[in-house]
Every structure is written in structure tokens, then in C-alpha cells.
Image (tube, rainbow, N blue to C red; front, side, top):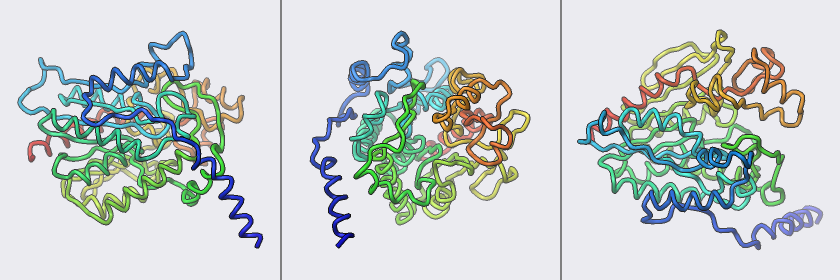
Length: 393
């Protein structure tokens, strides 16, 4: 009887979540031109963004805006128009895709980056977002883009990587391949399956204000639950339908957000094409090439770096905001301790990496690394992958 009462109470507590009317999300509309989408995005973000510094609105707005980069006609051949659509991850913004986007533009590719619904404004806007909202924006943007280019690739980071992989698997005949940075096929937690249940009765595990104009500091449980469901659905889609479609994956073995072992399994068993490639960064493994997988050792003591974080793989060291000498340092794991947070942000001799006991032995206030010393070489590999497989279309 007590169990039945407890279950009834849980359902009662969850009722408001089902009864409340869901706010309209900002999505890429069907058949919409990208230029029109950009106009609407600017209007929406200007009206809804929570500014970190109200005196710096122009810069903050530019960081979260979706954007398009065209190849330089003076340097690039026009005979083969190759486009790639990219998406950021959960709690991020299009700013997180700037580094790879600019690198791909330099390699003569046409790049578009979308804004996922619930992002770019304030973290509370993730409370009512669904994975289908994200899918709708990515699908509509990709459907439109493939009408305008000769060859289309899709790609993204983390949640954006899962969306890109799903689109590629469902539109194999329309895309040349996928480029995925730290894609999420499973959250790196043994209790991730609890998130949909917790989301019924609780909105936040923590809720910190952000001092980063390009990223939210906290993520509500309903959004985490949506990522859990999306990653599970995409994982099963790929494993149950192996394809030879070319896929390029770059990830960190030490990733504390994504389960890299599951990503490797998805790659080996679902992405079976001989042209598919994986680049894995590891603080433990030595650099090596084996079949379709290339391993890079990511222990760089001369740079005070021990392993790459989830967000670092596609980060340019020269990025003026998140880079090696950038103005913003990722210290979010100290948000509950102001003293440690300040030390992490200001220590000029600090260590960087992904969260681990080994890292915190190096420094009690180590920061999360947000750039990849190997970035330029990685993007050269990505550019070559795109060109090689586009020529075979």
C-alpha cells in the first residue's frame, strides 16, 4: 500500500509538467532560407537573451547567433560547392563551433551553424525544450542546405553530433558523410537512465548564474533527460542499421560528459565503412595507428595539460576567448566554492585537463581545458576527409 501511495504522489507531483502549456521554441522553419532564419534569430535573441554584461550586447549577441561562412572565391574553385551544416551541444551556443567552422571555411567549404532551440538566451529556456525541437531545427536546416550545394556533409559537437549522425543515417542518399566532435551516444554516468524520472519531479540539481556569455553554467534535468533519450535512440539506430557512410569522429578517451567507450563501440559496429575514421586523444595511451582509429597521447606536461576535456577536442588554442591565452577559463566545477573558483581563474601556472584525480594532484584548483594543442592538424585531417569523400560522390 505504501508503495502505491508513493507512486501516486510521484504522479501527482509530475502533473504540472504535463498540464502546463509548452512555450513555443525558436526553430528553423520548413523551407526557410538561411538568410531569413538569421534575421529572425537576431530579433529573437535580442528580445530574450539574458545579458552577462549589458554594455557588451553587440559582442554577446554575435557569440550566440547562428552564422554562415562562405569560401573565398579568390582562393577557392567554384566547380564543386561543398557544404557542411554544424550544430553545437547542450548548454552551448554557435560560438562553440566557430573554430572548426573557420578552419573549414579556410579549406574552401561552405559552412552553416545553427542555434538549437532553448539555447543562446537563458538556461531556464531549456526547461521546456524537447529533442524533437532540436531535430526539427537540424532537419529543416539540412534539408534546405542540400538544395543549395552540390555536396552536403552534416556534423556537430556532443548533442549536435548525435543530431548529425541521426540525420546522416536517415538520409544516407542525400549526404556525403558526417563529421562528429565528441558526439554523445551515451552520457558518462551509470545512472543516466534516472534522468527522465527525476525530471518529472525536479527541475534542477544546481542552478548557478553564468558569467560566460557563450554557455550556460547549469543545465535543468528535463534537458538532460532529453539528451539521454536522444543519445539512446541514435545509438540504437546506428547499431541496428550499420552503414558504410563515411564518418569522421574526434573525441577524448578521458571525456567525463560522454562515455567514450560507447562511442568507440558505435564506431566499430555501426560505422563500418572503410573510409570512416576516428581520432582519439588519451592521457594514458601512447600515440598509435590501428586500422581506422588513430590515437594521440594527450599528456602534455610542457603545456600543463593532462588529457583533453569534452569541449576541448575542437577548440583552437588561438581562440581569444576559450584558447590557451584566452580571457575566459573554464572553472565551473568550483562554482560552489568562490575561493577555489577565483584561484582557478587567476593562477598563471595552473594545470588544465578533464576532471580526474591525477589532474587535481597537479593542482588543487585545476581548470578544464578548452582547447586542443593538436587543433590545426586535426582540422587538416577533417578537411582532407571531406574532400576525399566528396570526390567519390
